[in-house]
Amino acid sequence: MGEGGRPPVSASRRTRFSAPAVVLSVFLTALLTGCAPVTYPHDAGFADLPGWPEDRHAEAIPALKRSCDAIARLPSERSLGGEAMLARDAGALRPACAALATLAPGDAAARAFLERHFRPVALGEGLLTGYFEPELRGGATRSARNATPLHARPPELVEADLGTHAADLRGRRVAGVVREGRLVPFLDRAAITAGALDGRGLELAWVDDPADAFFLQVQGSGRVRLADGRVLRLGYAGWNGFPYVAIGRFLVEQGVLARETVSLQSIRAWMREAGPDAAAALMARNPSYVFFRVLDLPPDQGPVGTLGVPLTPMRSVAVDRTKLPLGLPLWVAGRDPLDGAPLRRLAVTQDTGGAIRGLARADLFTGWGEEAAERAGRMRDPAAMWVLVPR
Image (tube, rainbow, N blue to C red; front, top):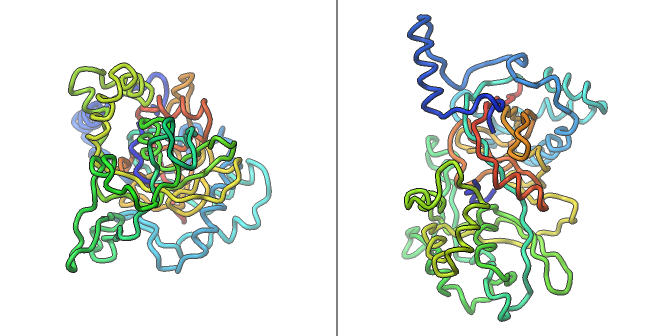
């Protein structure tokens, strides 16, 4: 969500592979058999989706209905994102959404509905990460304990959708401030954490841990439990326009962490051991900075994603909207990092993230609480993906 730099599932415990290995395998198969290499995306059938008959399809229907509610408010010609054969506008989903309104309960009815109104398109093997809604400790005012601010979006900050100016830039956004008629870069993370926004009344809350505030920005939304017991729900309101830089990469380059061990948990552990100054220097390597808004949401409901609807745990997913449309079902076949069991389920593309780039690249919303945090932090495996497009 929002910035989305969160740390990703394989088709089974037996099929851990790297992207180069997949490419080499496809090439050798083509060389030995005389067949053309597989290219993505391409049409597929529901029989190609591993685990499709076993999923509890009805669990994904509420998320899909929320997508339909959001799309119903859009003009039919409004683009939902995607490129080439996958690009869709709001009107493309209208027939399926109309049929969804009369859907009978139960997994059998849900599966039949999906197979009747959608068709799978294979996206290939990619990377599935996870993200969650964290809960921080803080206060409404600054104190010795709560000294790290979470900011509202500055009013002068401007975001623009470049796709409105050029079709090949669809889904790409830029942000900055207007000076002398030109859009120029806004303040970067280092300037903001040094106090460049102080005294403007933009602080929504103050929290007790700078690392928690950093990872809240990575997740894009969260909860702040205030000293008086109230819970403040915060959602993504914009970013400063700078590209997201994954700080785990620097720890790998320095030989501090092995690439296969990088996770939210391992980065946090390094920060605790290295101390506050080293942690601050590491976080400053990411110039991107996220701003928040207060959300009026009940505690049993997920945060709001890019599509404008609350996210559903384990059924909502963030994607690259320049490659895939929002609002569509997405089948993922991977691995649950907590127990190694196959993770094969239907999710709905309802969110985006700054680090989510590519066709077969997705970020699964795992929910909130300790288990959700543990699953999201460790979810970093290959996965096979299929998007279901309207017939």
